[in-house]
Image 1 (cartoon, rainbow, N blue to C red):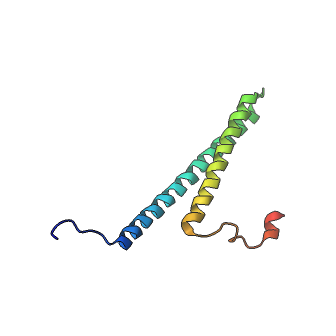
Image 2: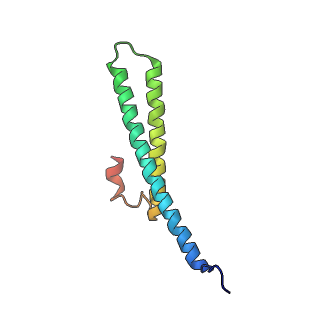
Length: 101
């Protein structure tokens, strides 16, 4: 009777859900920042490769790998953000024709 208070299960679940939402939000921001850095690095690598007098296949390969990493991080950020907010990214578009044209 005199001891540690046991939290109500509903409150415990709500606290865990809030913590999960904050963690997912921070994960989405981290993925966004990683994609930003990867896109910037890939653009710089592509520009450096264009500015060189002699072209090397390794330069384009590293730029393409970094660009792919940025695309994966960007997709992860979109997925996590839509999960956290509970919205579908496709439903938020105004209409399909402007997107496809």
